[in-house]
Image (cartoon, rainbow, N blue to C red; front, side, top):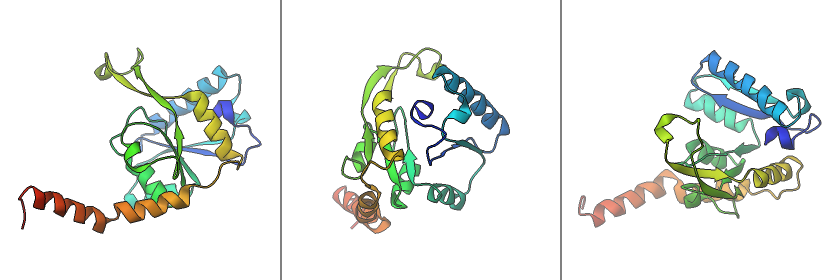
Length: 190
């Protein structure tokens, strides 16, 4: 979608953090990127730059990586929570995420850019542990539309509203109070 949507003239760069510092993971991803670009009739240099970071990262380093951006873009096939997206939202970044699974707990169209998604069979060639299962598939055409809006500045900013929601509803004091309520209701504490 990056190669279909962007050009070398776009004032944007895609940063992908892979693995925990394995150089081979970055090398493999670069090769995959070249194949993907070719599949849409482009060379890698014809799209906006892609930066591949293969590194182990401390919490502070991950926060710095997130804070260096303007958007956090996920094309996940299903998430438990997506902590990095939550962290990006708390930093005020624009979050672009699929409209499925746990994202619906804390994201909606008022605070994030949501990509239509549907349930599909896991395609052949994916790791054996997923064989015979389904997962969420983000709509690639819609993802390209949303990405184009975000890159070209035609999208209204939603990051500030997401940051306010996360601080209001998911700060430690609010979460701790909710946990205490659950424990009290269960008779586990006075």
